[in-house]
Each structure stands twice: as structure tokens, then as C-alpha cells.
Length: 249
Image (cartoon, rainbow, N blue to C red; front, side, top):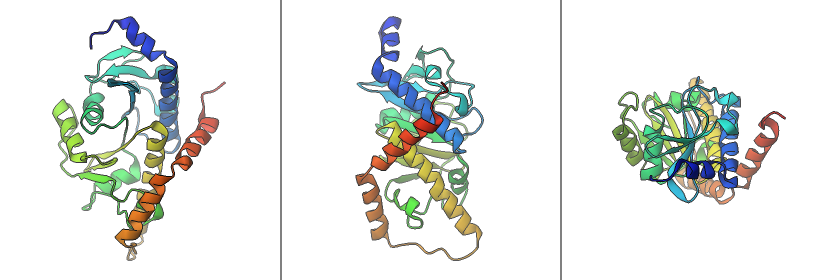
């Protein structure tokens, strides 16, 4: 992208992008608070409105619990840092850039959160969306990639994952972790949180050794539609997180 460095700085400090940086940092701190992080690994990204080749991303080397808006960096779709005070992990965008570009997702959250990742290690690889109410919200929204190829160290692996998603909002990556996507940060984070809650319920239920009792597909589909038709709860949840986990004064 042939833009002067000053133009990227203007984008980075524009009111809209400044707000997105704050929201992305909040999502990361919330994920740490809810036990969804893993060391200084994994990334959350959001496309810059009006420019599909520019993204905001958490930087290299910070715990999610310590990320603030000023730590977020602006990068292009090759992973090149354009603005921000922190460094970027070179491999950070192999998965994210491909999903933004190929799957056309605005917000991409990639984690190795415990219970969802545990299900990727099982024969089924994924969540049963006919079990708990939390699971039903994801009925018809999940793709499964059961072809683990090692660390995503090149663009081709990210592109393969993105194509496997085939438009789904959630991808269970076999022997790896999950990706949760959405049109905006608060909706995507709400899905991430409730996905882990649903996976935890399934793992705990399976650990009892008792027979699980699913609902029929039609009911699961209806619950998913009900959830997607009313996302105010997602927005209120994120605002509650802002009040309780906002940056220190």
C-alpha cells in the first residue's frame, strides 16, 4: 500500500480507530480475566473500517491482561507494522490475514482456550450444538478443520484454514484451538465467551460417564436464530466488561 507514514499515523489516531483500539484491548483483558489466554500467545484482530487491507492487532510479548489501547498496533495484510509503539510477532497474521481476506470477517479472535481446545482433541473435534442452551446458539455456525499441519508458519496454512471455514463464524482447529469471528468486537467476544462456557459444560457432562441427552435439530436451530436476532445482550455484556475491566484511572 503506497501511503506516506504520516497517513497511517492519521488513521491510527483517528477517533474511530482510537475507539477500536480501546475495544480490542478491552476484549483481550476480558479474555485474560475469563481464563481464555495462553501466555503471550494468540491474537485478536479487527479490520479498519473502510480499508480491508488494514488491521489492528495485539502486539508481541504482552500478557493479554496488561494490554491497553496504546499497545495495539496497526498492520497491513502482509503483517507489516504501520503504526504503534510495540513490535508485531512475524507469524501473527498468517491465520488472521487469510481469514480477513478470504472469509471476509471483520473481527477475528484466535485462542487456545482450555475446554474448546480439549474438544478439538477428541474424535468429534467440536462442540455438540444440540446439548446445552449455550451450545445451541452456535448451531449451523461452526466449521471443523481436522487437518492439523503444525504451527501456521506460512501464508498457505492460513489460507487453507480460511477456506475450510467456508463462511462459518466459528472454526474448531483439530489438535490446535479455535477461531471465533464476527462483524464487530463486542459480538465476537460474546460468542467467544459463551463458546468456552458451552464447551466446558459438554466436557463436564461427558466426564460423568452418563448418557447425554440432546435436543432435536429443529429446536437447536430455533435457539440459534433467537440468539442471532437479539444481540443487545452481547453489547450490554461488553459494556459491563468496560465498566469493570476498563483501564486504570
